[in-house]
Length: 131
Image: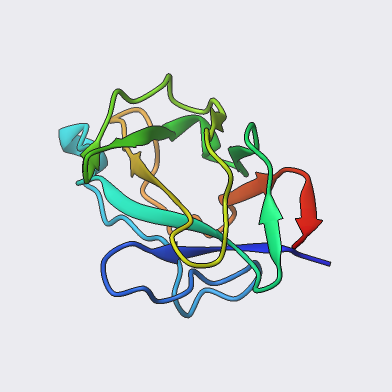
């Protein structure tokens, strides 16, 4: 059972859980230009009645996860992005009201064959507690 969910920071719409792609985090990139997508703000929120302790992680997984990078939020903008493919540790206690914002971006490289890769997921792992 999930005790937390991801939402687009802009608009507050819930990000689709795999395998649904209705409201997925998507990037349309040109590999021949080694294009990097514009960062997208995401907010992790605990389900109503729960909190998630500090130190939870967001990890990109899937076929092209090594082309996704995560960054903490810095006053409403992306902070420093970590290496592509690595997890991000969120700080602070996550609740249902404000959550913890972070940023995601993806890149395409000229050595790859263009594809519609729907295998990448952002996995949220942490310890949830009832309030």
